[in-house]
Each structure stands twice: as C-alpha cells, then as structure tokens.
Image (cartoon, rainbow, N blue to C red; front, side, top):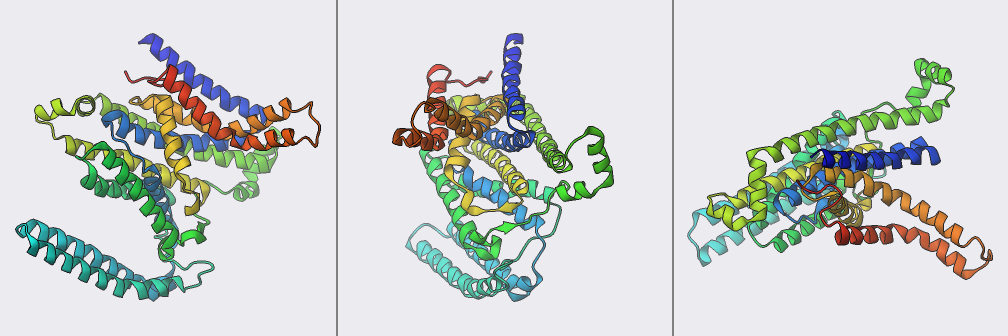
Length: 435
C-alpha cells in the first residue's frame, strides 16, 4: 500500500511539475488558465468515472449534461428582463405547464386503462391535443419575447442571484435530464443507453442553439456575474496597488493572476468536496454493492439487488457532477456560447481522461483530468516548436516546410489518439488503477 501511495504522489508531483515548468517557460497567467480548466475537467472526469468505473454505464452524452449546467448559470445569475416577461413570460410558463400536463395525462392513461387499441387511441388523442394547445400558447409568447430588443436581450433573463448558486442548480438540471434518460434506457442493453445519452445531448444542444427566448440561442449570453473581483476593481484599489508596488509587480498582470487564483481556490474546494464524498461513498456498503453489480449483474439480481434502480442512482449522480462542472465552466468563461459545445471536447476528451487516469479510481480520474487537459493545450505549441526545429535547415519558401509547420495544428488529435493507444496497450488499467 505504501508503494502504491508513493507512486500516486509521484504521478501527481510530475503533473504539478508540468504546470510549474509551463509557468516559468511561458507565463503564470497561462498556467493558471490551464489549471482552472484542468480543475473543471477533473470534476467532469470524476462524474464519468462514477458512472463507468462504479457501475459500467457507458455515457456518451456528457456534452448535454455539461450544457445544462451552462444554461443554469444563465438562468440563475443573469438579471431578469422585465419587458420580455411582460411581453410573454406568463404565457411561456402556461404553455410549458400545458405540455407537461398532457404528458402526465398520457402516462396516467397508460397506467390506468387496460392494454389495447382503445388505450393507444386515447393516449394519442391526449398527446396531440396537448401539443396543439402547447403550440397555440407558446408560439405567440415566444415571438413576443424574442422581439424585445433582440440585439441585446430577446430572452427572459434569469433570477439575478449569486452565480455560485448556479453550480448546484446545474447539477439539478443535469440530474433531471439523467432521470428521464435513465427511466427510458436503463435496464436495457448497454448500447441503448449510449444511443439515448447521445440523442439527449444533441437534443439539449439543439434547444440551446434555437430557443432564443431561453438563452439567446447562438446570439450568446455574455457578461455573466462573477464570484470573484474584476481585474479593473483590483487595479483601482489602493491596497492592491500598494501591495504590488511593495513586491515590484505590474498591477495589470498581478490582478489577472489574483483573479485566476481566486477561481482556482473555488474550483479546488468543489473538487476536494466531491472527491471526499465520492471516496466515502465508494468505501461504503453502497459502493461495494455498486461494484458487485458492475462485475456480475446476474449474481447481484439473484441476491435480490434491484440492478436497474442502482444504475439509475449512479447515472443521476454522475450526470449531476457533470452539470456542476458545466455551470462552473460557464462561470469561468463569463458567457454561454452554445456553438462551442462539441463532442470532441466534452465527450471524447473526458473519456480519455478517465481511461488514462484509471477507471474506477477517483484519484485516477482527477489525475487524468489534469494531465490530459495540459496535453490538450500544450501539445499544439510544442508541436509547432518541433516542426520549426525539424525544418530549420530547409528553405523559407519550401512547400514541405510550410506543410509541416501548418500540420502542427493537428498535433492535438494525433497525440491524444497515440497516448490513448499506448495506455490501452501497455497499461490498460490506467495510471492509478482501481484498488
């Protein structure tokens, strides 16, 4: 056990050394930017590790749950738009209630009526009538809201609450979507879950891009409130100016570093809390039961365990963690840009983090989050430097030289794929394997 712990500490130390070297070779602003996104990525990897490492659930819809967290940051922290609410806010709520009511009525009919053609006809009639009522109320309200100063608002806005409250709300949004997917797909074959999560992710992204009344769509929401001071506020504070003068630092650079360190402190606190909770859960009887179900579902069912219910629990928990990370990322960016959500960054890369770090080990997932994100950011400039060094002796107008230098932008994908293949070949259990 001592050797394993020493190895783990050395691995984390090596990753920390990469960040320190980056700070000295480039700038501490760059290092802290990478560190903050590394902390968020580690939280996302932790959520996926709960699903895959604890229960063997294959979630390829990480993007959707992360995007819901980003939406939560807007709906919680942005100020409401009174004109938009007056134009159609109550009607939007009424339309949503009508749509939800028709679905509930269809579910009740399915449960109460005996199976047969009559039940199908009644359910379809209720759903069609509910859809028509929903659209009749919703469409005019949506058009009225989106017509309110569309260049600046054109949406309902949020609640105007502190943005940190959006982090748990983002987890709740993602947990709600996970419950819907889980109730539909869990209990079936694992490939059905993968298809369902992929589908729900694309649906969520389509809603964010097209429903301007909700989050301005592709027009983006900018200027989200921050949980830390603004750089200009620090630069105008006498105490900060005197402090930077005492240490001989540039106030502009120092203010940026302090803001990034403040974000890092908040993100690290959330990460440590989630790791502690995850470790306690994993070591509890519940955690041992989850791993037993993962290893042999048939035997677990024979012993009276409700496998589908337990899968639903862990699927909701892991998705909620991804939702929290999504809200944190939008808070860090200060804006919601639906066009930036893509499966390569928010699904594939997170899976690489979990696999490389060590599936089933919380600390391994965190290590993978930091390491892979550092590689994702730094491989491109390192690749450019390598190509420039290799082609140093070639003529300036050489087509081969220009082609190799231009190809450095693709080093990210090549490096990630190669790194993942090498890990799967020589260390398939990850850097920190499950104990």
